[in-house]
Length: 201
Image (cartoon, rainbow, N blue to C red; front, side, top):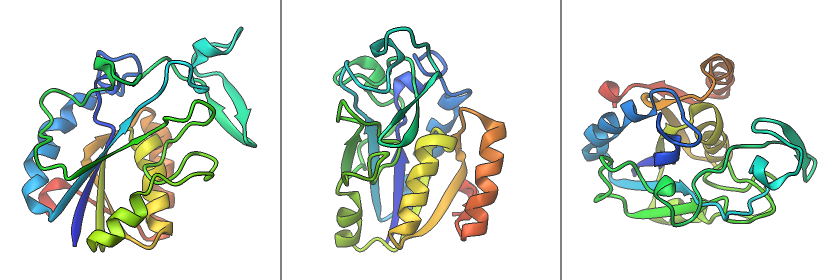
């Protein structure tokens, strides 16, 4: 089964949001245009409590984009974003959500971040997405969304490790740090993850 996984196309990651991804709004019409090409569509939402450990505001003396260590891993401290139930956490108003069969929310644990759609950053707890996709019969998994170098990247790596044939849709994704993403893209290609465009699906 051919599945589309849409990562975090939420208001706070748009150019006017609290954690803006440059040109993030431009992927919305691309994602809408390709949905008919898939048997199954699943999406994720960053869904943080206000006191989330990844927010710089929750650490005295720390600033946005400072780094700390959590569970032995480096954690970037972010501006408050995608707080549960807020407008910033909602999907972009123009994103077609009608065909989404399931929405998986991540980052709900106050004590650890969750970039990947499959696991938290410490791989302590699964979101259940692997089991869901396998039960549905997913073989080919196409990923897109925001941001390419963070949540999309970590989701692709976990998906690949879980045994899915993975495709990254380049024009349906945008990076927070485009320079860093070029390096990550090379590592994905080396692993065997395929780069595609919306027109080639």
